[in-house]
Image (cartoon, rainbow, N blue to C red; front, side, top):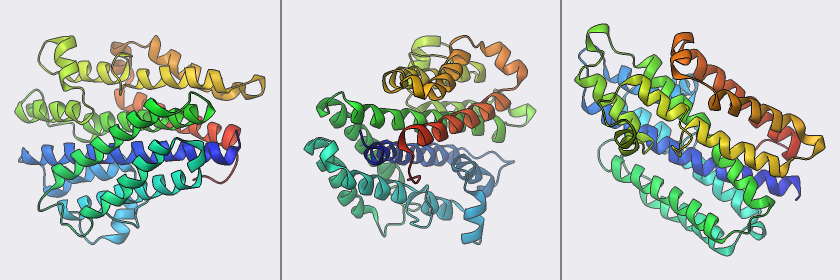
Length: 315
């Protein structure tokens, strides 16, 4: 497969996943804001959403104050923000248009109609009304895209690069979501285990569609170390770090040759740390430190994939 074609497919999948993840971030932040802690202002409640996306400095350069309305517009509809849902879906559609012949007509029609339908939300003040419906729409269309591509595409290299982009992006976001809740939103000592703390962990689980899975597996009160275990080490949880890297290692094994061993080595090393990791050891050494290191290693793997297979401009 031509590296240019692989590049477009890989980044198309990453942008679709990024848009869905940003919708999840907005949804969970809005839900958390409904139960305000006395010690947290509006800015305190919404800054973590910017921290997750890594765009705090860019936001501050373009907006005078950190309010719910400004953050929602910035993360959802701002064309100047490369991580916004608007920018992600536009980039996904442009990447797809460049390689229409490499995917099925159903897959192209799905992503094209997604972008056209997105126009219904332009000009709306999502902070005032319709934010939940907007987030649900983005998530549903992302699910539909994956379902159509999975159900219609030949299991060739094109399909594998599409899947690879999805899981690299998903692993990064799950780690960022968990880190922000644990590190930046850690409550005061008297609030640990309280109603607000419980609601925030519940909101985090719902943001990655893991609330029912948590109840089924643990059948107990929501506690931080079990949430972390579910989202980091459980390979049967679809959006966990372990589940993502189980998929990534298999995909890279099929794509790599003797000349491409570094990608496979990095992915295998990360997967082994998740396979044999123990939650008590992770907490003992620091969950924040573990997640920060994971994000860096996942980013390094993405750079290695870009250099090894795609080897052209970054999308």
